[in-house]
Every structure is written in C-alpha cells, then in structure tokens.
Image 1: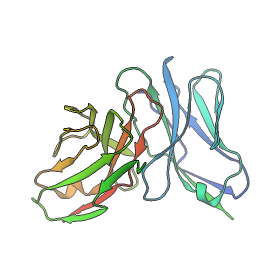
Image 2: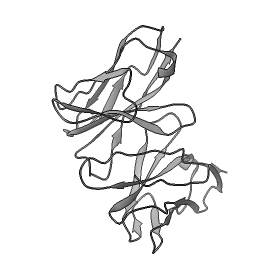
Image 3: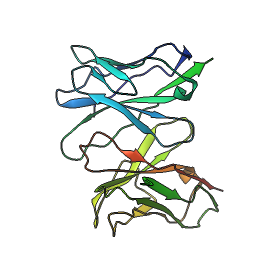
Image 4: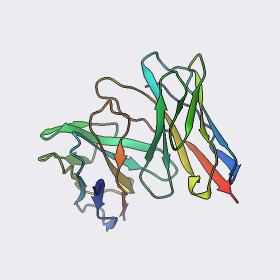
Length: 111
Length: 113
C-alpha cells in the first residue's frame, strides 16, 4: 500500500472552505485516493474517493494533481460539525484491499 | 436499516479474563472487518471475513479470534485479556472488498486492568 502524509492539524473558520492536503508520492497507477473522517468517538465515515479526475459529491470535493502525487479534500463551507480527524488513504480496487489508516489531520472548525 | 451495530459500548476487563465483542450488520454485506484504534492513532485491521465461514488475519491478529457463521454476525473473541488490548474496537462491513465505502459501527471501548 502506498503511504500518505498529512499535516497533523488544521484550523478553519466556520463558513469558510477547508482545504486538507495529502501527499502520496508513491501511489501506483491502479490505486485510488480515499478520504474518510472520524468525528470524536464515532466510527469513521466515508467521504469521497477518486482515481485521477476531480470528484465532487454532497459532502466534499477531491482535487488530485495531474501527476497523482498529491490531493486536496475541500469542504466548501465548513461547519462546526465538520470538526473531525480526516484520513487520506490510498488503496487498490481489485482483490482484497484493506484500508490503512494513518494518523490523519485533525480539523478544528471554529465560530 | 440499523447499519452496523456493536455491543457492548463499554467494558472493563481484568487481566486474564475473556470476552466476546458482538457485531451485527443488516445490509447483507459479504465483507466484514474488525479494527482497533489506540489513543491518538489510526485504525489497525485485526481480522476480516469475505463471507460466512471464511475469515483471515489482518495486521494485528494476535490475542484475538473470530468466527463468521452467518452473513450478519462477526463476533470478536478476546482470550486472556492483556493491558495491551485496551483500545476502541470498530466493526465495519462492505458489499465487497473493492467497494468504495466501508460502513463502521459505533465502537466498543475496552479497558483491561
């Protein structure tokens, strides 16, 4: 599994966009980038995933660089409920592929 | 759908005791997983199952056992509990391994004293 590097913590003002970076310089061609988040004491929650194109859903947008060595998760209008630890995970999509969780980025959204 | 449910929510064990953490899902998912999460760390995979009757080890299986007699249930057994097993345990499920999303339960917080 490719490893990922994320900043340990970030702050964001409520209502502003939160941009969470992730480096995955050793990603291979068939590996996807996944984002999960974990709100305090709860189980992780899937947010979004992508291969090489930018992706958007009702929760967030995912921007992957052209060389696929890094990506950014964007929460367009952060709310207090978005305070959580965000995990960037790289995994393949064939056969059994486990999720390898690092320590993630702790995002604090403040009023 | 209740999704993934886990019992108990909290438990304190004495060293050497045994217990079973229960996990049930009502989404008819084939794949189920057990993770542990130590304070300030990410989740680590203990065991997983690709269907009833089939289980396999993850990254940190020592000290644990699992069984999968039905699609819905995936209990995790701790034999001879040790302080190193103090952790939060999460069960998850997905339709297949390659599926985008794993659905997680609320967790069981276990303390071994």
